[in-house]
Image (cartoon, rainbow, N blue to C red):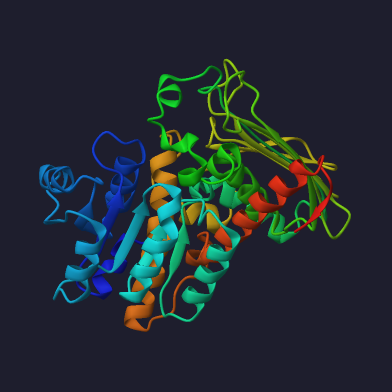
Length: 386
């Protein structure tokens, strides 16, 4: 763990946040994760689309510079003597692109919620803008911050599992098994395609499932066939997808993702099968990674235990037996980003493992995955190139 890296610049990184006001789910997650390992301080905020509420929320949280709106933040922070270093964006999906562009124009590094954008053209343009800047851009695919996910990736990279043969990823939630009051009265922006994007299930959680598979295996599919629909009667937004994928080495993949499975909790699970063995990880039991080898006994690897990779150990912060969860995983993304930013500011060499955070290019691949899947589903699940 690299808490001491802030000593290299003599201060904590200054973080600005847009979105995630009081009462939101994601706001406290981001602010708590960013400050957990003491590399950031939240100094600027826009916490509501209502100007007065935005300022009052910021003040109530003790944020020094609470702005009325994003335009005010960008104008003031651009020339501020202690301007923010990093901007965290956790607003509705249709605003990610514009806010990201403005942040890059101001010279800020960015951590943005997924999906990167709602359209492929915006995602491609954002990749171009980041590549032409001197800034870092992290996409909040938060599950990649779990130590045992990083252990799985390290095992795949080391060749322990052999050549990729099959990957199966599922994300099975149940909180939308019935029509909700907020979607019926129109107050849930996630149900509005003009805000959330063309498909609720794809942009909200299928991109997580897809990125997790790519992150661990190190491979992207070459084509896919998708079936996307709304399962719950009366619902207009998609709440289910089933997707098959093909890889360049003839490996195959499948994705089962829904928010409408009655009785399900969170249900993010992945299994990767190679030519020598397999791994399995279940996010509701995040400290465990099952390894099944053709030639050896089954192993349950435990976070913080013996025999783990440097990548897993770097992402571990408390001793085994003391569970680390969602906020700690999120905090690892913030830590990675901080280490890379501080290395750039000081000219020191960065730990290559700090580069394991999801980038703007991962975000682009996620948007491409969404677009190809929708195109396939609308064409009777025809195979589409990626």
